[in-house]
Length: 352
Image (tube, rainbow, N blue to C red):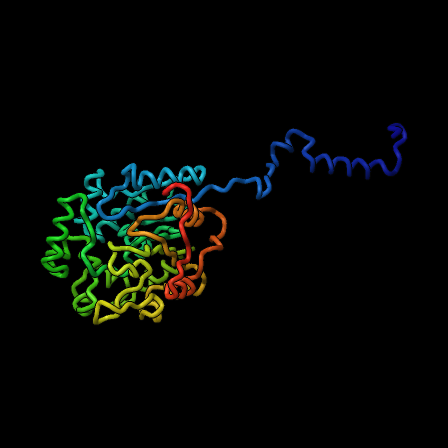
């Protein structure tokens, strides 16, 4: 352009040039004031934290059990925060508490731990093993925290009717057996022994409802607490794993929320056949109908997962992506179980 004799188009061209320059961040102040937003694919999603709750006789941190699970999760989910709950001031109290700290007290203790942990404030996934799977489900109902995916591995959701196999630690196991033999529903035993608080006697259903101080209440079997159902329905997914050859949880169908038909201890009813489901007293029917209730089978005895099962079947529920497509809604899983066809099989990689 001849600056001494500007053409009529010069002002317009200059404005266009300035506009393009501003949009491109030609000026230092503009580049600093306007942040560059990366594409969605370029932003690494912060992994959702995971909370673990161990089973009877175990502790939060044994290197061959919960310690190994924590390590596996940290290896497979980059940057994940894993909190394994220690219910007590130390591991010894944590282990003893699994037998002799009342369930409601354990739930209060766990709720306080979670509320005081800032890394869990935005929500978390939860994995419970054996009775820890039951306790985490009860925690969903009683503690106002954000649990996204709840995974119960071998958890006796409808309680047990049979002495749990327990050999270690010997002193605690012997005391448990002694108290159960006295009578699970005696006030002395109910107030002292954890396992008595999920003892479910199908031969004396009315006594179970009247004298079990925890399970009937939290399973909404006596009066319906709407809050319990609402919090169950708020889960993104509820996963229950049943072990095909379980000899510890009796009946093993309790791991899928099934149990004996009232009045005898031979015939079983599935979750869907129960009044708990049909009346949707706990929100499980709505969860099922929306495709968020997952019943998985696993080969082996109690917590004896085949190599690779945890990694291939459980860990996918902990990623930020959508629900694993290879899992089936609960109704399909129940149908498969009735036909003797297990839904999933273990892989060949490491145990966890």
